[in-house]
Image (spheres, rainbow, N blue to C red):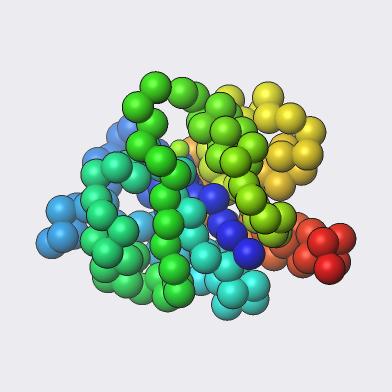
Length: 156
Ligand SMILES: [Mg+2]
């Protein structure tokens, strides 16, 4: 199982009136609520993380693992989409990734990006869209868990 994870507007709510706190490692603090919600999904589904965020290219995977650990996210494996060298929108980045996927597996897309509303139907069914100013919530975590489990039944 896989969580295609965005950061801005998901783990770090976008609050124009307030700059996000920066931790000692130089990256933004995640919202406490979003961390609880993400950990819940990981605990219930054993999902790994595939970073889709535009910050993905800023760090190596080893460094990302440390950044998540530092924020108390306990995930087994972190991966990332290829660097977005062609400046694709999020929808096209994810659609490309899916086209090259060699083996079917349950996944959800957790993102606030509006371009994802135009995803093809089969992918949009896996979209858990956050509100940019709120980020990931318990309710959305529940939705993600249910979504992953129902895909598991279909694939199995
Ligand atoms: Mg975002």
